[in-house]
Length: 204
Image (cartoon, rainbow, N blue to C red):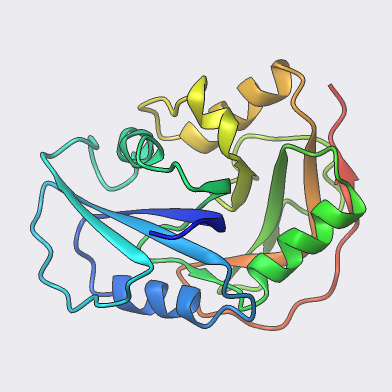
């Protein structure tokens, strides 16, 4: 795999929605990416032929479909040719400007190590909300990207709130974290147009 700006880690338990999730990655306006798909305890029965995508099959690792953190930890070990790491679940979707928006946020805030994108839901709910000024349990998910070096000393816990715990640990370690203005990650719903939200630089 060639050097790229960002590598996406995609754990999967074989949901049919995986192909649509991958398509949302292929549809990115900025093509500076590659991806690692980890089949957790199952064989790859999908036709995935994009050269930017690496396929890994592992013994069952995640406790259930709500605890993909341990699978992500395995995937992070394979990332060695990108400056940033992003995440995508196999039933979620990226907005087509995810990478473009990430580069925009870095350009405007070059000291950040983590960028949390807001998540859109089918109901129209957006999290984190426009009123959030910190990281709250139940209001953040896997909709963030981080500098690759973070993965060398930090891992996900096997916990239903793994994303929140991971981000709070990074906050406690004084990493600079930004909640983006952009809604660029969509939870079990296809991407839709959203307004910009306030940009928040998380305080320790």
